[in-house]
Length: 263
Ligand SMILES: Nc1ncnc2c1ncn2[C@@H]1O[C@H](COP(=O)(O)OP(=O)(O)O)[C@@H](O)[C@H]1O
Ligand SMILES: [Mg+2]
Image 1 (cartoon, rainbow, N blue to C red):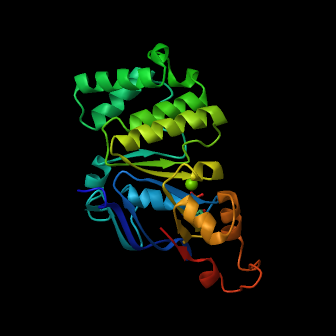
Image 2 (tube, rainbow, N blue to C red):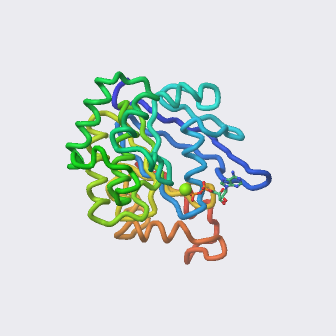
């Protein structure tokens, strides 16, 4: 697989819950090794899409290929090739740091030796050597999130899905978290990350912006700012998040005036 190959390919992906459409014909690709930001306000449909791409939930229609596997047909193959950090803290509070590494490493079939090496690598990287035998519940949230990220990467997955990994975390820890993300991308892991912090959108190579189940814009932060004629991703976001009842001056067709596809 070369750098330009698509590690994620999504075509006309739809997810309905009864008559409600949470993902409305999503189309996008993500390249191998890319840091892709999946943005949108609360309720836009980000977690719904991540669950489908992780093989945890079936699409209503459409196709998603992740790491070479159709998510609807081969969800278990997909799960082996990805890491997933859910929106809600996902390690075991009643286990120690070391035990969490051992548990998740075991699920992914890593040898004891490999788990020990990975545990030491991450504890040193996070400067958390002294936390080794502490229970997770004794550790502050920001540190726990960094551990959760490390555990999600323990098997060096092709893609790691991070669903609002920095929610509720202080700005300094958020910055450190992004260093971990870059480190992981440098090693060849594709990072698919949701956030509603617009400063974090700037750290991504490309972002998509979702509103009410639809992807309304996709491209690099620089290109999107240029296309929308604004200086910050925050302003891009505000323009897109407007409802059809609040159209932009000079345009009333939400579909045509907001849809942007840039590289
Ligand atoms: N299992 C479900 N059943 C019914 N509605 C759901 C379900 N999961 C999500 N939704 C709805 O889909 C919409 C998108 O949710 P979600 O994907 O969690 O958004 P986001 O992660 O962007 O905040 C919300 O309106 C939510 O209530
Ligand atoms: Mg969510």
